[in-house]
Image 1 (tube, rainbow, N blue to C red):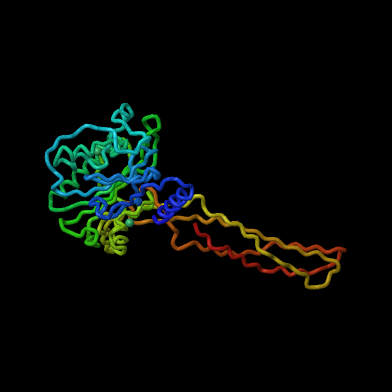
Image 2: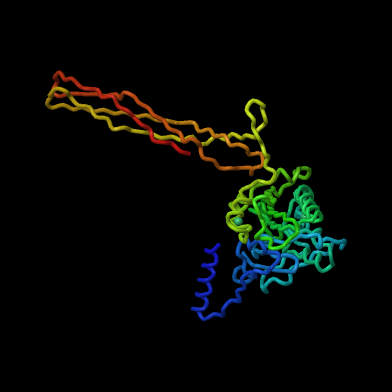
Length: 385
Ligand code: MN
Ligand code: MN
């Protein structure tokens, strides 16, 4: 997000020009364990950037959004050494936020119908009281529908700890997307979706540089709704590219570009579907119909002329044609894709039409005239939805 950086630089220059104090800009340190794979929004710990405000704690890093009352993302490293037997702590307001910022209170979610949903879960930091307490700071919460939070979301959080106990270390980034209203008198946004990016590596060193094409990377895009409690988390898998396109963030930016591009384009668990002609192996298909259909009116230029002189004579000709092609597209496979998708009809639609125009001729004064009626070819242009 060099654009953001440039904008921010201009802001500093402007303030200096006005003779104001120079803001204490602090870019994300590169040595933060929790930002090993990157800082998804180039968040900075400057109160003048209240919608992308970097908070770093020993247990995680986040970009906080003051006016939404929730983080844009939370990022943390998880390994077996983080797991112990400490019990859950108590919710507390974030006293570290800049003075003058509203601090979401533990009671602000009461009666809203939404859980105080941890982004970094309490269960990922059970090695000590101090570590667990950091997960209960209210800036780590978003309003989460109970069926999301306690259903597939919690199951996936448990899976991450299972993977960590099995000899892996994980990098996990998570947040909410969109809005379905607010709570706490408008101070806290209710996201419409919750998302996750999970990178699983066998325990080792130099993590950003050893992500490889066979590294398991999981993207999750889950509706923040009731009614999904018994659903499997696996059905919400999407590519990291999809989450990047929706949020505008750049995940895994410290992973070498070619590898980053590869792993971000995959959908975890995408079936290694091999379709063998004749065996009837199932494939997932989804059909979309473009609406509205493309309409194009062509009014060709038609000329007519008298073959023998008639003076004076008026000769005119007109022809019109309207084409309304139906556009139908099949995408395959899409079972693990997001609820909506865009497509380009392939091949694009070509229509050719020809017709004989109606040609009228009249001559004044009355005289006999012969009029040639031309054949007119009308080529409708390529119609591309
Ligand atoms: Mn939770
Ligand atoms: Mn990326």
